Length: 208
Figure 1 (cartoon, rainbow, N blue to C red):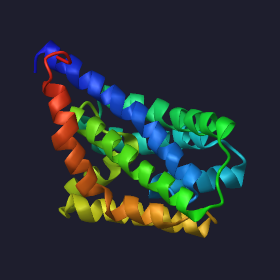
Figure 2 (figure 1 turned 90 degrees about the vertical axis):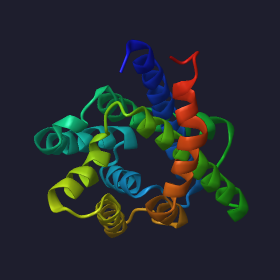
Figure 3 (figure 1 turned 90 degrees about the horizontal axis):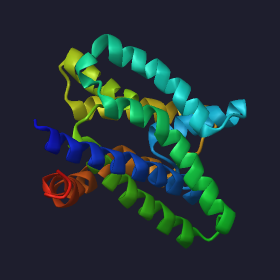
């Protein structure tokens, strides 16, 4: 892989991680449930009275120890940028939106926020994953489990996401339609954005 291509992949990865923070914020504002891992982090943060970004950072430290021990080849610069910045960006985006718009009690408005979150998060995941510059600590867990157990990645991802959703529920966290959509429905959207946006961006002469 030459330097010019690496530059394009790096820029696409940065865009994906930046957009990802906005996607998580939209799900939080919709009050319709976040992705399972974020839902668990929010539940822990609410219990401890600590901001989502702080909890996400420290829990990712634990996940990274597992990734470093069992999946060193998955580690790249994207691992650390995702680890250090997604939580902070999500909290920043949430505060920015709340400063100009109050969360609506109208179900239709909340549904639109959730659907916007699905689109934004799918685009972000497509950009970040297609760039292939390192796997985030939590995302690495299901890949490692798949390699070591011989089970499919889909089953392992369903297991880790379901476990997070269960723990979030037991801790009184918000589990809703958004959580279900993230757990089972993002795949087709990510595939669409990967083919139509991410790969084309990486191949664009101006990006490389």
